[in-house]
Length: 137
Ligand SMILES: [Zn+2]
Ligand SMILES: [Zn+2]
Image 1 (cartoon, rainbow, N blue to C red):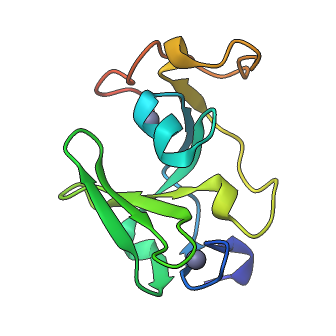
Image 2: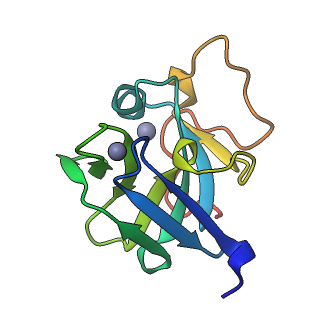
């Protein structure tokens, strides 16, 4: 594997670290209430990877959300680090946890009906709520 295709990140205190290899499956922004509250932020920016391409070091504390899946955070500093769902084989890392900015640009936005009014839309597909099943990428 080329090192240039590795992206590293983790929590604030460094107890949880990860390296994601290769290109993500998709990159998005979610404005839903769960993401807003979970991150304490106006939205959640994420990159989805096949779970086998993300190596994780350190223990996470998890919270199971029946609608979204399993949220993983650092038990020491409390930072949200990634998200996984039972069965789909994917993991979503949060862009704010990456060590370097500018690595990914979101390809779509979901739950835009909950977007902060001061936040302009990106020039990407916009979905009022979830993406319909079978959407491209
Ligand atoms: Zn931490
Ligand atoms: Zn969301």
